[in-house]
Picture 1 (cartoon, rainbow, N blue to C red):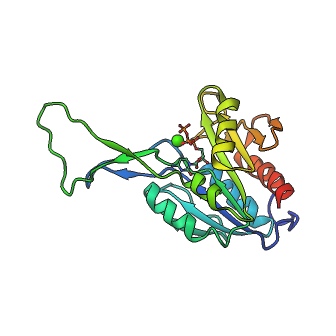
Picture 2 (picture 1 turned 135 degrees about the vertical axis):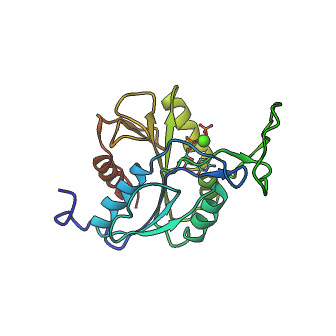
Length: 221
Ligand code: CTP
Ligand code: CA
């Protein structure tokens, strides 16, 4: 039981979590997004609250209900998320970035619906800011946790992200594996720490994995 009987071992800790996809408008009807369901971040938020933490959940558009006791801030684009996260960064003791942030957005957002004319259409994309890296560059006391969804070279890419984004640890998973990834209720994760320590976990529910991640966070607080 992760609920009422849980130890209040994160009492009054300030936990800032991002979850879900971002969406990047192309015109009033269309946008660029990804398959993130938000389930991992919501599960961590729920577990953190049950352990006594104060939780702010910066959430992209999802179908999920906000867990009781969690303060949710709704965002759409990566740039919205950047603003919201930086607004609460000073407050936070811990930042856990499960959100699947769009790396690119359309350079132009058409005011009107783009009409077809049966020739090729080229959409020009420009890079979004890297939210986690920007936090890493200004962090003072915050524990910083990233996520890495990969389809190959999982450990190698995850280690590069720890260094580039100044993370304490990263939770990596291979989204090509059954039982891992965006839509389901389970995940198969490996935690890689800035020290180089690597711990691979069996498949478990996202709620259980949230508990494991917060146990690891505790060691860094
Ligand atoms: N992230 C972020 N802002 C971005 C892109 C990613 O904050 N613009 C965060 C994600 O929330 C995640 C971590 O960085 O916690 C890793 O995201 P990922 O997409 O795996 O890494 P990228 O650095 O974007 O590299 P790539 O997509 O090329 O693998
Ligand atoms: Ca990315």
